[in-house]
Length: 87
Length: 87
Image (cartoon, rainbow over all chains, first blue to last red):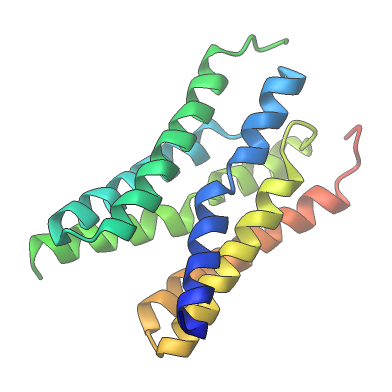
């Protein structure tokens, strides 16, 4: 594995798992008042389009990283819309 | 421009600008208590690595989209760390 590939894998792992700390914080505190739902709607659309792009190109790293991202962003969106607003 | 390219551009625009609604909300409400700082630290690292990856490959679309993403995520991080906790 060369230097470029290592940087690419680090980039993919960090951007894919970035939303996890927000999900954990939301579950722990049960508060999402200051979180923007629109951010996660736009991110779901974005990584959804990346997944579709990966499918069109049959590019598995793109499908896998963005597919996981889509699921995580969708989970966060679900938490936001089901959370009691005064929780 | 073919269908794949259009999907790729949509994907890039949405994932790059996704953080904007959160920045606008934080500036308007002056509240970021429920927002995870760690999320934006991890995302800054991730898109920072993607920018470096783009530089190594001299791939301008990767450099441009992730460079903008890095700036936006860094702005959000700055807002979080300068915001009064009881704002």
